[in-house]
Amino acid sequence: MNLQLQIEEYHYNMKAMILAAGKGSRLRPLTDSLPKALVPISQIPALEWAIQRLEKIGIDTIAINTHYLAHQVEAFAEKRLSTGAKLTLFPEENLLGTGGGLLNTRNFWDNQSFFLHNVDVFCSANLLEIYHRHEQQQNIATLLTQNRPTQTKLLIDEQDYICGIHYYKTQEYRLIREPHGTLKEQGFNGIHIIRPDLFPMIRESGDFSIIDCYLRLCSENIPIRSFDIGNAYWKDIGTVEKLAELEADWKKYPHLRACYGA
Image (cartoon, rainbow, N blue to C red; front, top):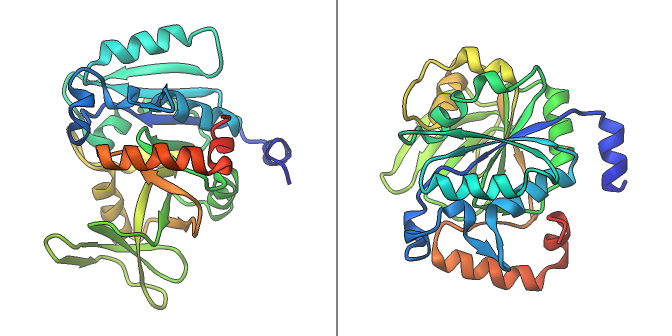
């Protein structure tokens, strides 16, 4: 089934948020004078690629949080006013983290599930298929995951429930929910689908990680699940080295470029 038919079949009126407030310290010197959101890939800012990725699956309303060199992101959004998705910026005087940044947008959403997407991740997974699964299962949140090297891995059972976390750097292993069957360890890929029902459940405040909120909810048997994207392409651009790898992959993999309308 082609992408347009999927959009029409599911009849979703989707919104999304792009997390774009971070400083991108590990991308220095590029980010000494440029926010991470505007770091170019194939001469086009990461934020533009993220927007195009979401537009391609039918999303036309996007929230974007800002902080570091926010005026540059504001100028980018101004130039994009007359084309594509409607962009709403949520400035943060102080960085609020992934959880605080999301909570700051709580009045933006209607009653439909939405995407939360890190600005610095690139992924070829079928986002509409994952959204459809999320709606079928009526999860509060669905996190895209993958078996890949990372310092922090989620513990996931045979029914895809998140049951805990393993921090490899400190060797902290936290099992917070009784698993169904055996557990596997997966890296989180920086893309979530969230029901607005989550907001009344958030007790954290200020600068906090949404993952910490999810883990607390898992311990309360709230349905937070993962979706294993298998062999789909995924890479973040958190470092200069990874940015260079993505640039090389961008030229090598036409299917990746196609996901972003390139």
